[in-house]
Image (cartoon, rainbow, N blue to C red; front, top):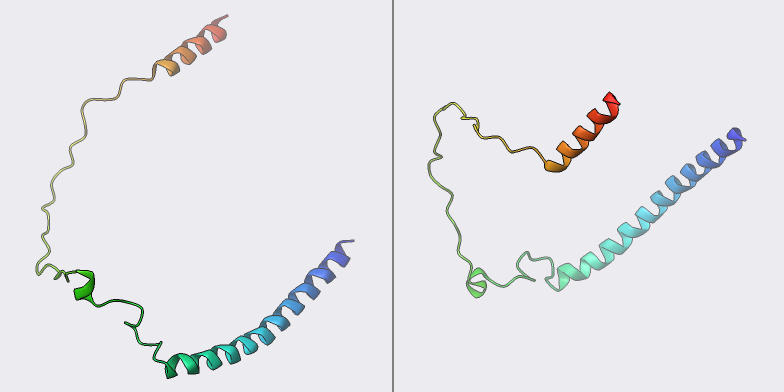
Length: 101
């Protein structure tokens, strides 16, 4: 039975590969057809769908000229620890009681 499933899987992969090549060529024809009209009507310009920066009220931010570097300082570890969870204490005590008894 495994031989039959292997044959079916291989057949599926071959058919899928063949159709992807055919559909890819068909898709390229459609893309080039619509791409021609997009170029003809000027829809390929980058700012066609966007308003200008002045209309949107946006400001261009200049990148910082110099990046500040920090000195290597030792990292302080927090001295206070969280208190243990009360529910965990309850279960730990219960486990100790069971282990003793």
